[in-house]
Image 1 (cartoon, rainbow, N blue to C red):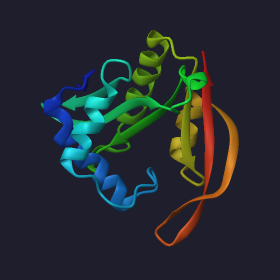
Image 2 (cartoon, one colour; image 1 turned 45 degrees about the vertical axis):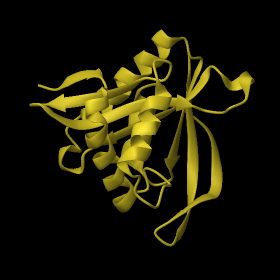
Image 3 (tube, rainbow, N blue to C red; image 1 turned 135 degrees about the vertical axis):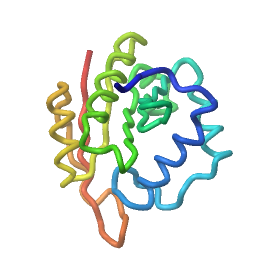
Image 4 (cartoon, rainbow, N blue to C red; image 1 turned 60 degrees about the horizontal axis):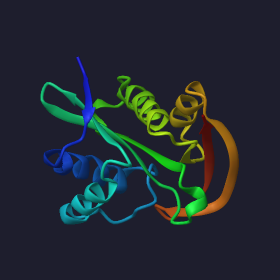
Length: 162
């Protein structure tokens, strides 16, 4: 059975590994160069208590993670956050993404955020369906906003309001 819990500093290496695999193999992130472990440690520290990071643990192994991140430095956006969910490649398709997304949405609600935003590359239908099932609605399309693997990619913006 999967255990969801707040991430700890000891989890950052696993978070980094899962993220970097997505960097190299997917369009789930527009990063094109893997992050170093020190960079990810700074990212984790910067999240602090205000921006939650949670992990899915299975038999003692971190198999996925989710976070809420600051949307903008501008004060007027203080209650808007961006959602990120990543699942280890060998554990995808087993419901961990949904479990993590449900949990991070609830974390956002409890933290008093007003808008959760997800940027999803057009054509990643599993992610789009999952977000829709959990009440996210399409807010717009950023045409050719990302470039990865030699292609221009449209990025869909989905949001959930509380």
